[in-house]
Each structure stands twice: as structure tokens, then as C-alpha cells.
Image (tube, one colour):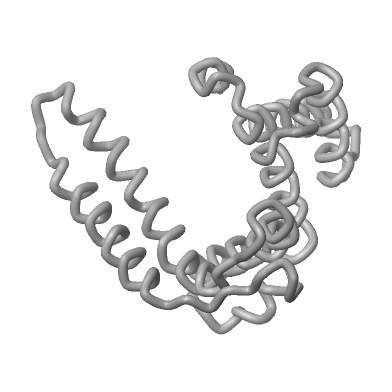
Length: 179
């Protein structure tokens, strides 16, 4: 994980994820210590800004923290809303919508508008992208054995592109002046 942080060039979102994982793992390892995830979120944000003050002006930093906070605060509500769906779909929908809702104010502020169709398109694209990444990783590993099944991740990649293309035809924009 630490190698991935280095390879990503210390991108704020990867740094947040790795730093939070390390802190939460530390507290989990010492079971007698009880910690709230939101406290860890605030702690890691503070420490990240202390070591990288330029993160204060980095949109990726803020989007990453807002998305994670949204998941913390809203996902239980959406779990209830989608309780009749299979668990994998329920969790995917609740996490996706929670992150989208939490980041919407930032997107409106920085970009001036947001296409509301993203809430719907992400419900399809994000789970498919997760499957794509798994098969891409497996295809990479099997390539060392001279087994080539890149056609599976390629299928998912083309499917994702097609879904994005279809949803791009629908424009339901909210502009920041309307917000």
C-alpha cells in the first residue's frame, strides 16, 4: 500500500485512503482502544494539511474527504432505502449516492454546474468498473503464465464506455446560480 502511495505521486485521495487505513488498522490492532471513523477522518485531514499545506487548495483532497464523510453520514440511510435489493447492489448504490451527494456542493462551487444524470449513471458505472479492475488485475497476473484473457476486462471496459456514452446524451444540469 505504501508503495502504491509513492507510485501515485502522493495524490491526496490515495494518501487519504492509505493514511486512514494505517490509523484504523493501528486502532483495530490494539482492540482496547475505541475510535470513531469520523475522528480518524478529521485527524488524517489535519495531519495531511500539516505535512502538505498545498492540499488546502487541492480539489482532489477536498473531494476525497467529502466523499468519505458522505459515505459515513448517508450510507446507512440509503442501505434502508435499497434494502430490498441484493446486498452487493444495495451497498454499491448506497455508497455511490452518499459520495455523490456529499461532493455535489463542491462540484457546483468549483465547476459551476453538475449534470444530475451522474447520480444515475454512477449507479451502473461504478459497480462495473470494480468488476473491470478485478478482471484487469487477474489478466495481468495470468499474463505471467502466458495465459491471455484480456478479452474479459476489455468487454467490461467497452460496456462501461457504452453506458457512459448513452448517459451523456441526457443533460439535466443544475448551475451554481440555481443552487
